[in-house]
Length: 158
Image (cartoon, rainbow, N blue to C red; front, side, top):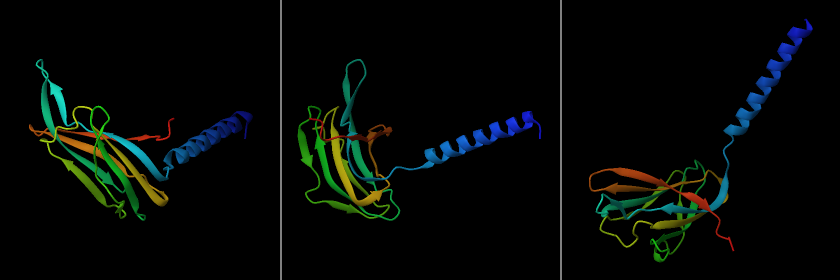
């Protein structure tokens, strides 16, 4: 084999190794033992030149995506636009079996939260698991719907 051929084979081998190694690393799914997440909720949105509020119904959905392990939801607190607690939904931890889903429904008549309402959700598990999907689905009277995803937050920011 000539030097040129050997060099070409070597370069290809290194590229294949790098692509495979990075592909494996990218395919790894992180596991968690718990999180606190913030979920935006829109009781209403403001529309039009007269700034008319459009009332929305909201469904906060928590999906345990782990195939084998349960998770516990230990906190589901609903806050208004000014950050004041409106309601704590779970007085005791709620256990979700593998692939189970729970939800909290807020009617479009419930306008206490306002435009900047949100949920703070805390969950944990006995061992590292796939993190749940936590989101809010909002639906308006015209049937239009949109989804607000959650974002992990750090509670200890003092």
